[in-house]
Length: 346
Image (cartoon, rainbow, N blue to C red; front, top):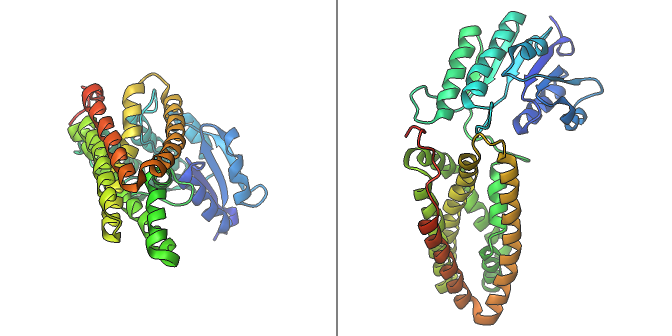
């Protein structure tokens, strides 16, 4: 029986968040690894995960079967991790997660290799979501080419360096209200305040993890603007609540509301940018610009909030924040149009 050192595993999509973890795990088990990616020159971060010469990156785009077949040459195992959350140009859900998955499975079958395919928990051919339908099409294509394939359907995958929980964690840390809550806790609870504060930071992250899939589903079903209005309408309620009490149970409620807002704004930011930049090739540019504006706004709002609270006190400061947030909600309602494409299915 061949040892792991004699077994070549080709990992498609091995340079991403999930891919890095898979490559690291294979390296620890002494497999030889070929990483199939569109830009092999950008995979230098993978080399330290294994021994010298253990990891080799090659150019492979699953939208081009010939490149997939070349990447599978002499491999005994194929692992397909390729997936996208947003469409752009030729990178459509059907091309990548449907036809692309089938191309990997056909190449694995031709090479006599074992096939492992990562799908998604919501894969369903009858789903209203194009993402979920493309995942189901991919599963069908994989099983058609390699009936013995192993298909995994993970839910939300999160961990260090992910772009999901860390995105929302960063949203929580730039909230101008969070430091003020911490100050109140330090005053009222003394030495144990850090533990209680940790609990308040964790609460919105849990809410985000639970609600984010729901937000994505209903943004497709009911449109972006209704959810966006809910996301912007909750901060005034939260600020008004904090203006009149600093009792810990009410702080937990306030953080629950923050989690709902974080889930809605975090998910819809990506979806709305996708809507507005569809077929333009400017998604990354727009996302970077929005990220920069969020960072600038966070810095300015934290500074302004500090001066505000020093000038009029905590209660008045929270009321002022509530008024500003309510005004922002009104502006969204009046001036922001629905961005969901008219040809998107409900």
